[in-house]
Length: 162
Picture (cartoon, rainbow, N blue to C red):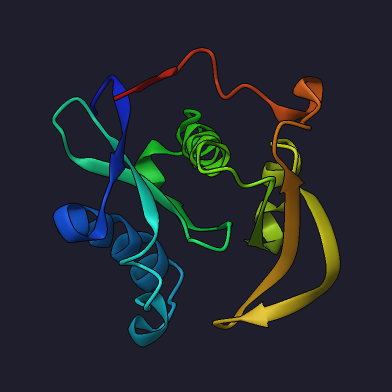
């Protein structure tokens, strides 16, 4: 098991294999999302974050598309519970803020709604099916998060910026 995890901004053009490896393992293999549903036209124009372990192997990812939608947040099963997902989402929100967006939104899997609520996202609208998995749309204003409710990851397993 690797120790330290670092986050890096990534691009589809340069880091596609690493981004695909995590998403393939989590979404296509683990969650059984049809492969043709996983890859889309938003990959290329999106800003991506890649979590790497001490061996520089990809262990997590997420993306921010030009509309302010966060998506494809995934962490390999053996690396979950270490604050990596929290760090990825925070970095994506920071990227959104850096390009002048005032809010971000996402479609959270129903099981992950609480995770996103702790990061300042609020559910809106009904539960819906997306790629055979129940989801809920969520939104977060940038810079308006109540720090007490936003969580700070797992202090025992900090993720360092890359």
